[in-house]
Amino acid sequence: MSRRSRLIYSPDYTKYYFHDEHPFNQHRLLLTHDLMTSYGLLSEQDIVPPRPATDEELALVHDPGYIETVRAQGHSETELPQAASYGLGTEDVPCFPRMHEASALIVGGTLQAVDLVMNGEADHAFNPAGGLHHALRARASGFCIYNDCSVAIAYLRKRWKARVLYIDTDAHHGDGVQWSFYDDPDVLTISLHETGKYLFPGTGNVSERGEGSGYGFSVNVPLDAFTEDESFLEVYQTLVPKLARAFKPDVIVTQNGCDAHAYDPLTHLSCSMRIYQEIPRLAHRLAHELCGGRWIAVGGGGYDIWRVVPRAWTLLWSEMTDQCLEDSPLPENWGKRWRDKSKLPLPTHLFDDVQPFPPIPRRGEITQKNRLILERAMMYAPLG
Ligand SMILES: [Zn+2]
Ligand SMILES: [Zn+2]
Picture 1: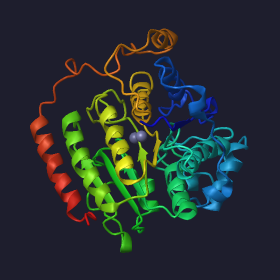
Picture 2: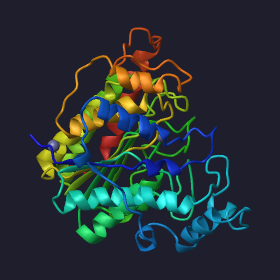
Picture 3: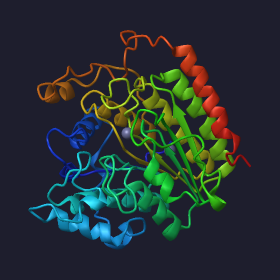
């Protein structure tokens, strides 16, 4: 049994804040931290506060001109003329005060997680503020300013010479991370996501496999809209262990966006809380089997901040710390503290009662389609 896990956390993470109407809202971390604490899963010694990433660290992935512009924009009253060319000041990524500092703290949190795990102070570490997988080298995108996943992987390659398995189960394609390591055979990126046919960012087709010596080391499984637990888990549990065992990573990085849930307002997958128990369970097992336990988890998408995110990431933390949770009523105090602030009724239990979910009429067809896509995804994958 391992209790050597660390949560990288500070209420300062909520300074990454676009505006009141924006769907990306880090206040979800306050709810999550409170739920973990209310369950008795978290003590003060488990928490490590994040440090800001340095410019040099950010530049492992990001363009120096972009970093300079993000910083200057966050200290400017008016929109800078060059901001738009870097994807800043859009509907998805509006500018806000001190945006560089808020974003660099999230990246530093993920680097903190990397260092704790790689120098052996922790077996596992979780930075729930991270997972900003859409940010590109010189462009903000999809609510993401700096890509903490990409910076952390580049840092793992450079400082720790590690071979990295990246598993992204956010409902959106992990495009920024994929493009950062598209030609690198020492970084295997696996992304399971809703098909990009109707969903941002539109990429993540099964034919995106990497390039040059990295060919085969980008694996994508675009799932059909309305995919439910069983089909999602069938794909995940078939694909990930095979690839992981063949690739033999030194460390596993998981992006744990929880926007594949049926409640999520931005996507069209139809999963329940069950997948958020199974996803980290398998990653955890593989980390012990293949990497001496080295597992770094980050957050990601999750736009039902009241009903989905706190439960999903509490389940992740319970798995990471071997404090397995059965379905149970949520702690009363947690509900009391937050129910008046939420516009929707809060869930009463840790897992969803899936009976009241409307049945998906095309279930059989969707399952078949996902199986075919899975077969195609595995066709050129590096399976030894
Ligand atoms: Zn463990
Ligand atoms: Zn997402």
